[in-house]
Image (cartoon, rainbow, N blue to C red; front, side):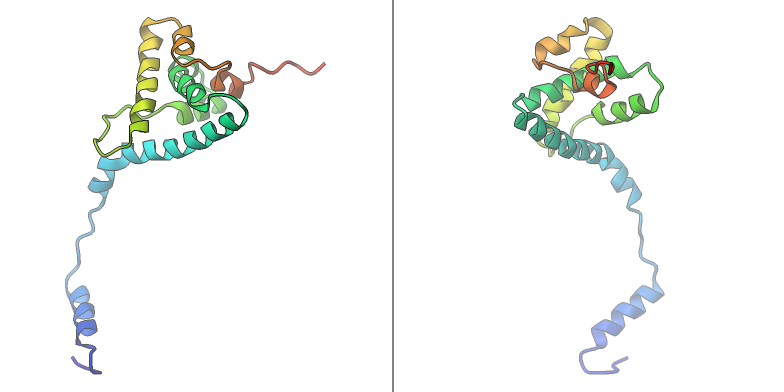
Amino acid sequence: MDITPGSSLFSLNINYALGYKLPNETKPLLDAYKPAIKRRNRRDLYGRVEIILNSMGYDGRSCLLRSLCEAKQKLSDEQGLLYKTLDLIFRFPQEPLRHSEPDIHRTYHYAAQVGNDVASTYPLNKCEDLFPCPFSLVDLALGYYSSPVP
């Protein structure tokens, strides 16, 4: 079907696509990478939080790691929308890490894993001891540092 010179390749592609349905089964492939994608999205958010805390004079990485550690203890029992939102932000996915993921994922994974262990066997200040930060981002978000307006 040569309509114009040089169009035979174009015509072949159209005829092939019309005659044979090409497979499109990308879901299993995406499911395998879903935890890595979640970690990557959280890494981007955590990086921004660290930059903000660093600009305020705090050690942003340490404060963020403390929050990842405390999330399991402070957010697991409550049922409000704020608690669920903070739980979604500060719960780092615990599925096994891939070798291709960056080292910062391992750091975040470690802090979250320590938090899971602390929730079951250690006192709450273990996270504060491991990741020194003068305040808890989780407590700050929950309003524990605000005083009532007189």
